[in-house]
Image (cartoon, rainbow, N blue to C red; front, side, top):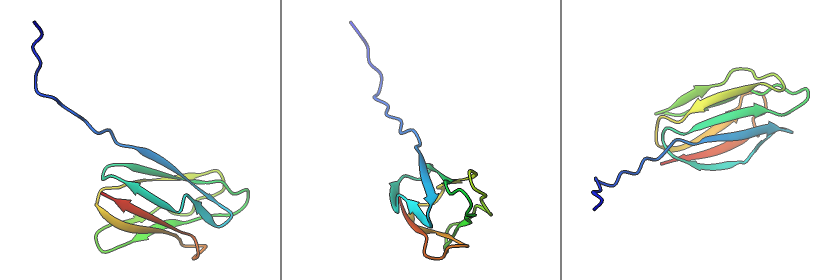
Length: 98
């Protein structure tokens, strides 16, 4: 006879790669969970990017990212946030965090 304990399900955090190239984020919309990580990768050959979030409950500043560099963001708050580029104002990535 086999004795089973209580069922346990653990949700592991996700790391999502976002490409910054051609003055765009790819993808432009993400649905993630609190605790997940976004890695922003500058895929341009010569352009510098500067990803940031400026929201009431959550802020992030990735600093200047030279070509080939990356910035990491851990989502610690739930809600909808917009990642913008301080150098290219039309670059926007909407992040929905549960």
